[in-house]
Image (cartoon, helix red, strand yellow):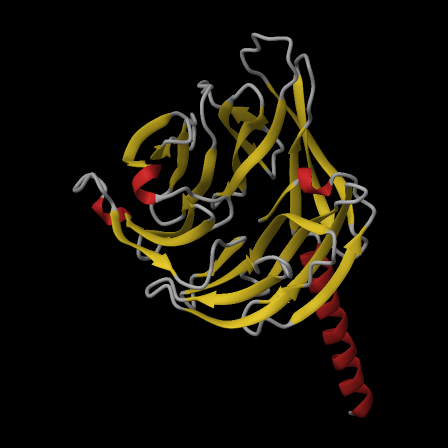
Length: 345
């Protein structure tokens, strides 16, 4: 009996270990390559959190109406995943001539397509897929003055409906990675920023998508957040109705801090240090990818050591429910890691 118990325990351990290994390959990165002339290409790789390597998964190509000899610096915009493992994202220019279009990639069949429309103004700030209503929608800025919340056809990628239009002067500027969507209750919560010289203020905004087609203005809450000037990331657990957000302390410390946010009241609680920012180092970007199956968040932090303009990358794995740090390590194996947009299935 004792040997049987040991055998069962060993099998359970191996089973759990295999699960952990499979989960380690759950993360992906997508990146459009840069260039002067077409055709243009991009790549998708799986991220192995054990070896800290990007493993090739598939390539893709895209086109646009190139009308200049200037180089195009394309980046991956926000990513959304549907019920059948199709990855939607925008491909857009970060600097220089502006181009914006939607792109869809089937992660199982490795087939892809892009929208027939190509815009020459603006960026996509966020993109969400609604699994209950089977819809894809996102927020797009126009000339950094106007915001348009619109829906896209998941098959053709055409723009099929405008939900609302906002003026940034009224409702502040949206930030990448600082928005959440609750598909059960059909609302969006964001933290936006506004420059109030010499300070930057953060604003809590909530939009009720149940009002689409009923009211032109979907905003139900908009107010100033005290003791905070901006957020870096927001990840949402729909079961607990709780946001885990990160923000950066003011100069001279500039450390990155985690805090829970109540999406109904905007109250912030349980501030915990995520990462210290070394002297003479600047935080350029923070990515946060939440896996609800493991209830863990994978953070990618991009530092730049300013005296040498040297890129430094840190991967941190955190438990959502406790803010406990499971793993932290510096990644030196991936060049220009910050140019990859991470996501999980």
